[in-house]
Image (cartoon, rainbow, N blue to C red; front, side):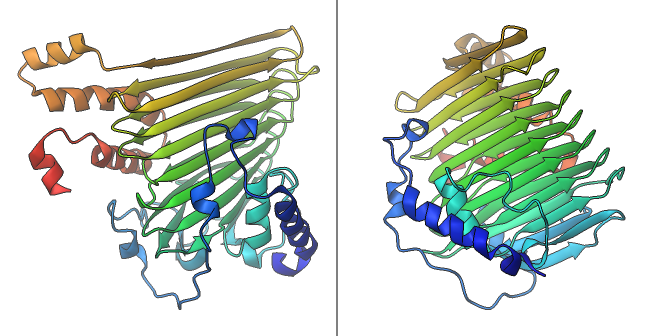
Length: 414
């Protein structure tokens, strides 16, 4: 029986919850830096046009982002609908359309009763990826989910569920791209069983006139290890939420993030790491590069519960401002409810070192190339931590396209 029938009551509850909660506003503390008014005022519609084969060219705008042939399996979605599956699922792995699956984990972790955007997704989601890894299975390579948005006034609500069994290992990559003034509201739930290892990457390079909101909800059991990296270079208004619950003793999580913005882009990164059990570790590193009149936000919160003794946690946010009109708001927060922990956090906001620029120029490198080399070096601390080479290549290409254009000849090529 499909999720569409077995979870009808959940969908109805979610629809009622969104009706009660409404669109988030800046009156809410968690939304004080970001207004969704430009999204809320649009009468969004659903894409009902027939799907066509081989949709990868539709990702034009930032290059062809398909990783077919390099990924173990790739699922391609257009405006939230599954258009094509490329490759086959490895042994011990289930990869299917979530709409055709029946999982007890659906909507158990991302809270649709209190999070309006999760409620909106839960009520309206159609297609998405369901990935289940059998106990003890190691997946060679990675699984790629490519979401393509196109058209004006179209919205979609992709819903993904990754369930990694005990002592399994898997890498999942999500890529969001497209063209037009559309709206993507995605939710991904990651469930890591005892001893499971999950590497997760999300590349958001939507159209520069598109809107994107996304929630990644991570639930971890005993001794599990999850790393999740979110990279944002696209979209006019973007909100990324990553929530990790360390619900098993000895679990560990790494959250990395990188946002490279220009023009009037607005990207809000909101994270919560909840240490519920003892002997857990977390590490968080987010970096931002902002040019012109862009605005970036990092709002990170680490919670250490009363029973989470021996917690070790570190949270850092570094930002570079390349213009006088760029703005970044950084708000790292620790909420510690017991005293047997090792936790620290920090935040910096600065500009490129003129001494470093002078040094590179003295070696015969032009000023603009010197600046871009320093920017790439700043971003590389995040990129180099990624374990999948095709993903690193994809990120570097997207970053190069986003580098500030100081020279007229470079601007003309865009």
